[in-house]
Image (cartoon, rainbow, N blue to C red; front, side):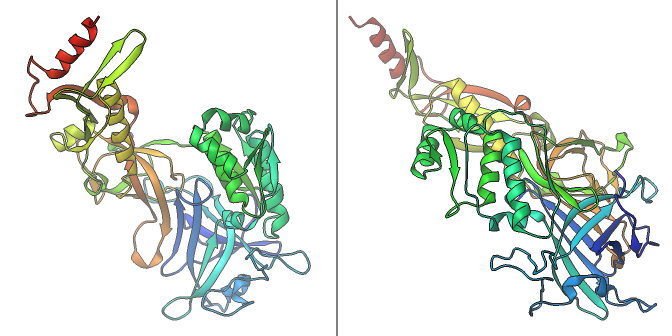
Length: 473
């Protein structure tokens, strides 16, 4: 996707990452200096992905151009080290006496780097937000500004509505309408989704537990045949949380057209990238220490309760008698191989059935691996990488990779940056977790003697009890 507008300002710059402010009818590209420009994309907040950008610009250049004049927030409405341009309501939503907000729309534009370190493809709008704060930097002739995600307004917009048989699109259209009416920054807000038209209320009834349904009734959110949100307690954040949890979709804002934004809901937008040396495709991995920074757990061991499950007709009985228990182990073979053995996290369960314990161990292993997000990976600038994407990579340092089988990771956070002061290539820094599929987990179960941990003896009291139970008159 190419840029939807023509640029003015610092147009002689060919940096693959840039900041553009909407200044009246102009789209002005600002020069980036010193600490540079960073675009942060994270799994957090009321939307599936939250973005924020921070940039350092010169106050004035050598030709006498005052670049801060193009940023309305540098003409303060209030005091303080960080100022927001334009009048706001008491809740912080930008407004204006003439219906026009003094708050400025800003875009981060970019393109990936090729194998020779030069930008490839066309510039596109990566992120559209608003200038939320400005201030000074240490040193002479430096100013900073931050661009915030449009989702920050969602928590200030009250939600008073009932949904009977609305699907995802209908609910998103309600959110977009209320959002547009509540602020004057983004006047063009559209909706896009690849989700079907199934009733969210019906999905709530079908997928919620008894405890969750009781909570819905107690909170008066479920009223007869409707799901109800009230202005005294709910905002658009609560509405989107319900949509995302019920329909199992990801919702966030993306740029649209010259100045609009689109509230997007998708079931799975993640992309898969092969970053191994053999792929010989961009982006290229500069460093990957993820495996050493993540917890080295590659398996889970669960010790079940003593006893045995027996079947009498159509009913299963869990007998809490005896001196044996079942031990289930779930492992992820690629990590076991990489670490040269099993590194198990041990826990206990009240369950006695071997199959149930194996499923529980597999689930706990996946949860433990997914929760670890401290792995770090650095690539050449790759703005196409974002949270939820999956990448395959081998360990690497200073661009040199090792000849070992690759592992798969899921992106938790991406920071795309260009920093003129450090003389390094523009880069993307990733925080990742291991990404494993349930089908790749191997499980095994063993019956153990609770008195010594070894194989059970033939005279197990639980077996005697079972025999007596079966032959009783």
